[in-house]
Length: 109
Image 1 (spheres, one colour):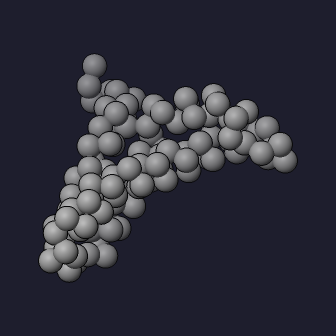
Image 2 (tube, helix red, strand yellow):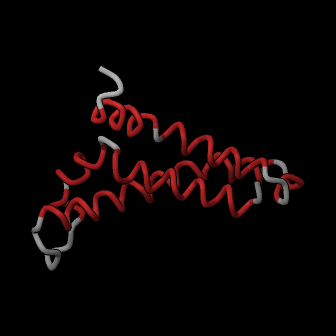
């Protein structure tokens, strides 16, 4: 796979985690702290922004190990290795969301 295809995979994993992660409810519960006063109090708007916060956090946290690898090994900047590390860490961060989807779908009891 090319670098931009792996990056698209990372973005997809971040979106998946942003939608299905159990942390979305926790972030939404603290909306009085992060939400500006002009934001509507509608639950769908709160869920959307909480989901966006979790997806962005997943993207940023999963990129830290890849950035450390690129910084530690300058020759790996052109190689796809750091991008695969980024995707792997994003997948690990998606495990609670994956378990939640499996429980909701009834595949696991």
